[in-house]
Image 1 (spheres, one colour):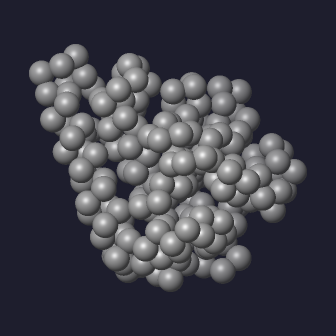
Image 2: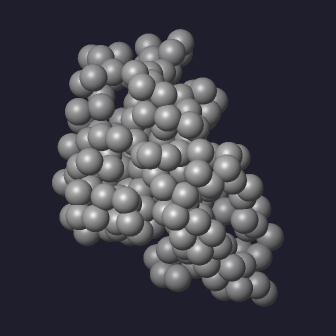
Length: 194
């Protein structure tokens, strides 16, 4: 993606009651917009000025450019992967098979992913990614980290910075993680497979 604000693919209230319109307005409209604006400002007249965000994340040295590129990419992937809540929501096809192969079952995957998301100390992201051999892995990335940095293909990321859930769940990160399964657009996640 270029350094620009991605379009929100649903109405700001479409994820309720899992994520409120108020949270979407702050998280997407203020936090993400700030990362995009800051990154565009930081890369102006640098070697990164004409690069895609993914390339900046993969190659930039630690520091402000990397941090803002990571958060820009993470949030673009994050907001694109949701849809209105569906009870019993689950992946199908190739993605479901890959999850079963890597984790034993969808329920086992959810448990392992929730463990990663709830035990990440401080702020950051839990990710389902694909390694170079096509195997699915779960990683915990502090702050604005993205699995691209380790040569992985990010498929599904859950933001566990407090701004992602505090208005709706206060300090109950585990409740936020548990409710988030209902809004995952597994077709979008599957489209990211290589």
